[in-house]
Image 1 (spheres, helix red, strand yellow):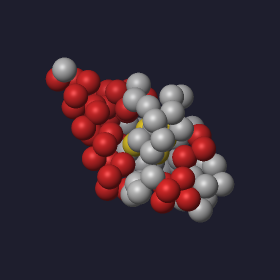
Image 2: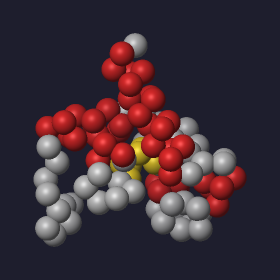
Image 3: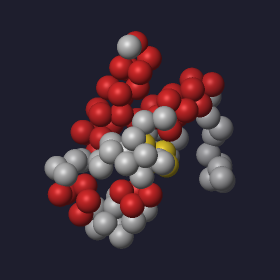
Length: 91
């Protein structure tokens, strides 16, 4: 669902997000991810997260304990997602 007043994704953003959706969770490696934007509309800095690491009580929108235990932060998560997407695109 699109937030009110939020611009639609560009072709480039949609392509990138579809590549992210093929990746495992950047925190725990689980499959079946959701795409999280750290800043609304910043799709090229988004990351794939499994539901517990995203919306769970210990996930990003909770206490972030799952992140802390794995020594993961926002910058490391973005770096991991970009590196994986680059590797997938360039073999």
